[in-house]
Length: 74
Image 1 (cartoon, one colour):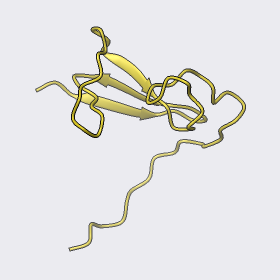
Image 2 (cartoon, one colour; image 1 turned 120 degrees about the horizontal axis):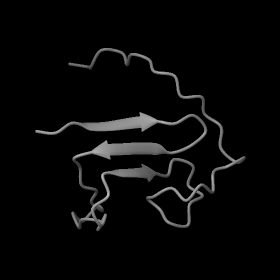
Image 3 (cartoon, rainbow, N blue to C red; image 1 turned 45 degrees about the horizontal axis):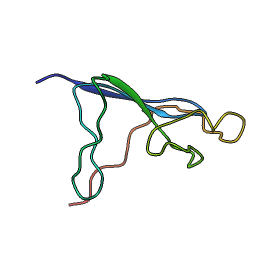
């Protein structure tokens, strides 16, 4: 199985790369036309949601720094 990598970009999108598919809540698959890398909007400003169109430039701030989540609740 191929790996899917998601990168949280500072002040921007989620970059998704590898072997993946994206579906809507009904399970319908978005046609990615062979793309192996897409960017998903985090700011809510994209006119092409769920995909990023760079509308976030200057309107969204989040410094992406990795951290450990607390333990799962039992």
